[in-house]
Length: 227
Picture 1 (tube, one colour):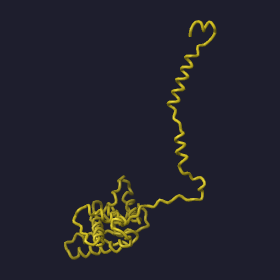
Picture 2 (cartoon, one colour; picture 1 turned 90 degrees about the vertical axis):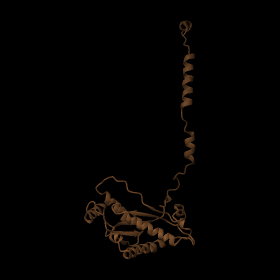
Picture 3 (cartoon, helix red, strand yellow; picture 1 turned 180 degrees about the vertical axis):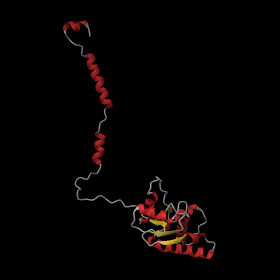
Picture 4 (cartoon, one colour; picture 1 turned 45 degrees about the vertical axis):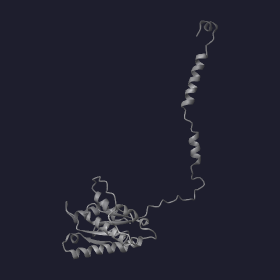
């Protein structure tokens, strides 16, 4: 501010105007306008005027569940009860001899673990054939017209406290059924790429262990009550 302005009682407003202009430019350049957001939100559907309408129900992916769990365990119990029954059925470190195999809501068939371990080939073959027949008869209920790769996928749920030979037996039985219904002239040569033209068959992912008291009981509850 010059001495002349002080003598005349006037203020030099040029520096203040410069500061105001700089601040104005700063706010203009850094402020985020919401016009684009409002434009997007105006295009999104709302529930106004649809009070009587119901939201569309999301359908779960269709699949055929094969459930394998200790024989004798029925539906209708709580996880803690399944846990207690499991403790009575086996001692720590021991395996479960017999299993129930169920497809969907069908009545289960019993798999005898000791029979799978015998050296008597005739008895073993008879038992395996009965399991193949059971799975084949129940799988026919889920077949739809079309190619084999378009059939409903199969997921095998085997209780983790049991031997995996039960799950592998179920897998082999489903693959045998698919081989029986393959197109004429089809022959599996062991090439994994051939499975792409067949029904999808997979195992349920392993459970995440949290080491809770009812962990095994919860797993049994889910598998036994699965449809």
